Length: 456
Image (cartoon, rainbow, N blue to C red; front, side, top):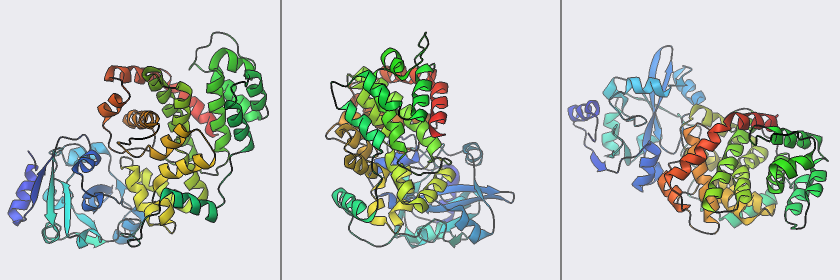
C-alpha cells in the first residue's frame, strides 16, 4: 500500500488532493529522500515529542531539526523525543521510520514550523517505504488545519541567496580570519619521521617517550586483548617491534598528538569521548577492509582515525555553533548529520565558511597540516556518497566503515548508504564485509576501553 489506510481515509474525507510518487523500497526516510533526486528543502517530516500531558507531532522541513527550547517557548511544555519503540506503537500501520507529517489522521495534535506553512509545494512520506506524496501549499494548509504554528527550529530559513564559496576561498578565509591551530610539535615530528623510509623503531620510541601520557597510552594499546600478545611488553620499543609495528604505532601516536591542538568538550554525541570511540572503530574497520581489498593497511587506518577532525576544528573555532550542533544531535539521534549541519552551520554568522560541512573543513585542515593526500581526501569527501576521484578507495573505506558503525549506533554519520555498492567499489563481497565486522565485534570491548583512556 503506497499510502497507509488512516492517512488515505483522512485525505479522502477532507477532499485533499495529492500526487503519488512511486519509488524503489528504501530502508530509511533519508535514503528515500536521497534517491528521489529532489532538493531536501522540498521535503517535510514529523518529529514526535512527549511529556506527561501527552504526545505532540512537530512538523518541519526535512533539512531542519526542532529545537526543544523553541518548542517550550511556544507551548510552555518541556517535551522530549519519543523512542523508536513508542513511535512504532503509535504508528503501527506505518513502516518504521516513515511517519507521515499529518498527525490529525491519527488524532495527534500538531505543531507546525512557520517555514512549512509558506511552502508552495512539499513532499513527504505516506507511511510506506516505497512511495512519497507531493502536495501543493494550499492542500497542505488544509491538511494541517488546526495545527499550532510557530518557530520550532533553531534558525529560520536562511540568510539569503549568497553565492557559496569555493573550498579554496573557504581555506583562504579560515587562514585570514581565524587563528588555526598549528599541528602540535610532537605530531609534526612523528609525521616527518613516518615520511623517512630509513626511520627506525628506536627513533619512533624515543619520540613517543618525550610524552609520558602518550607513552602510557601506547603501552596500554600494545597490552590490550586487541593483539593477544602472549609475552610481557615493558617498553615502547618492544610495543613497536614485537606487537604493533612501526606504522600502527606512528599513526595512533600521530592521532593522539594531533588532538591536543583542539579544545573541545568531552560530553555529548559529538564530544571528545565519542569522537575517540568513533575514530578508533572506524580506523580498525578501514584497516580490515584494506587488508582484504589489497590497499595500504596503515594508510587506511590513518584515514579512518583522522577523518572527523573537521568536527574538532569547528568545536575549537566556533564553540557556540558546536554546542548547538551537539545538542541537536542529542535530541535527533537518527537524523542525518548533514541536515543538522545545514540547520546550524549553514545559518550561522560564519555561514559562508561553515556551510561546506565538517568533512570539507577537516580536509582543509589536513591539507594545511600537510598530511598524506589519501587522508585529506578521506576527511574532505567522506560525506559525499558516490565520490569518484583521487584516492577514491580510501574515501569509500571510510564511508563503508561509517555505514557499518551506524548499525551499531557508533559515530555521527547517519546519511543514507548503499552498502552493497560501497562493498563492490572496493572489489569485495558481502562475505568479506561480514568477516571484517566479526573481527571488530570480537575486540569491541577493548576498543571501548582504549577510547575511554584516550579521551581522558
